[in-house]
Image 1 (cartoon, rainbow, N blue to C red):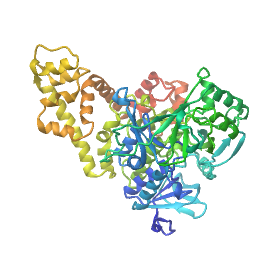
Image 2 (image 1 turned 90 degrees about the vertical axis):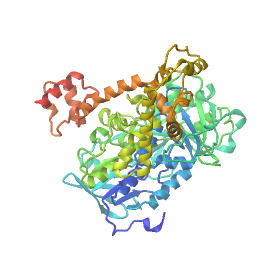
Image 3 (image 1 turned 135 degrees about the vertical axis):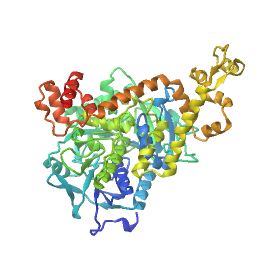
Image 4 (image 1 turned 120 degrees about the horizontal axis):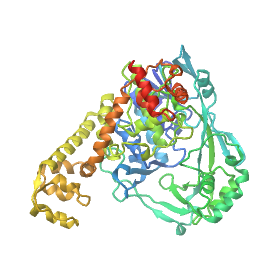
Length: 628
């Protein structure tokens, strides 16, 4: 970064972002681009956007989040497109709603690219320091206290501290403070927030060992390449021809499991040393062999951490067992008979703040101007963190400028599902996004994120006009194409050859192109010969637009059903609940509902209806009361 980006006391900042991880970089860039003088405080400038765990971006549902971040004007998609070393579309054997991209990253270039973007951003200053106190007066944020630069005033603060708050690393029966292996933990900030009335909890996550690439026997592992014709994450990426560096697959054996079980007496997980709750859907190898005791084998993915790396990430082998046990277990896996560990696997416990304490904007319900984003909200994963950081950065800037807050409904984006789940369900284990979490996933596909959200990003000042115009043009082309399909009839002599070629029964009278396309084996490519030339050109000018048209036609019934459900949802979301309503005084709802509503304090009837323990009859009683 250039020297003029370093901190100077004379600078005046309106928004301060605490933490330079995946949430922090998106928050600070969004805030600065919206015209807000922003200060990003990070413990180590060279660790900005560092990949602490797996060297990858995207995955099931996570790829949807990355596309939505891109459509709203965030950076994650563009950076991984520049620095990825293998790209793959997951779930291709299933419906398009659950297709999701994933990329292996060159983690060194990924972090460096974010450092460059931060340095080049106007209105943004980066400071290397530690924040140990949030300063508030009359329940309003007024600044932060730092270890080296004293007090710094501001109007809003976004805490994006990741796993660093009182971070404690476990390897076997040894444990020591750290936010990541080799990096200090952050102390004092949790206590500061607790003194302001914010409740905290404790979570746990883990990471596998890294091994030397030249210690692997590649004759005993299976190479796994990415797609030969990969699809980029960002809708702005053109001329996409990334590298396709292979990963490798192997598997644990019965001997591996025996060795691991032999180390359980020195496991911090099973001995009670670790108190925090770990991620259900990303368990350690110890968890796997206990929970799935009937399985003799688990897949292991060997992933390079950067191009030409001699350091390999052993995906699927997250562990906190002693180093000796890790080495013995790894060497019982085919291809890893001579594996040499460069960095051991470890578990890390850290503080978080349950999200029921937040508004939909990610601002604290208790302290005005305090925002929380990322793993401190109780999430797991770079993509979830980046999405929350972007939303917090947007809303902090809007608050400073006295503009209306910005939020996304469950029906609009996976980001809306993520925030709503965190606030209303307040999970007590690290939250991970899944396509099954989104009830409107047929409408919230990866391929249409720009059409859904670019206008919103443009209105916020984060998306350029030509990008928004491109998304608008796609929407119009889809609409015009469906209208043409519905209004254009073709005779048996024209359509039957196409139907027969696909194994479909011929017709005896004219049918619309729309009816023809509704048949499962018929694809739009075979019908484009009936389209006017200008419409065909418009369709083919945008990658995958023909597939989007086909999805809208073939799943029209499901789409209409989801749209009706969305209308009902919007009615509930429009019914606001007064912030000063005392739920404990409402005797017409159950005791459990009163307790849950008092704790979470939902902002709308829709939110209240999604809180576990609040029944439909409770909602009916609450609506009657509000009408009165």
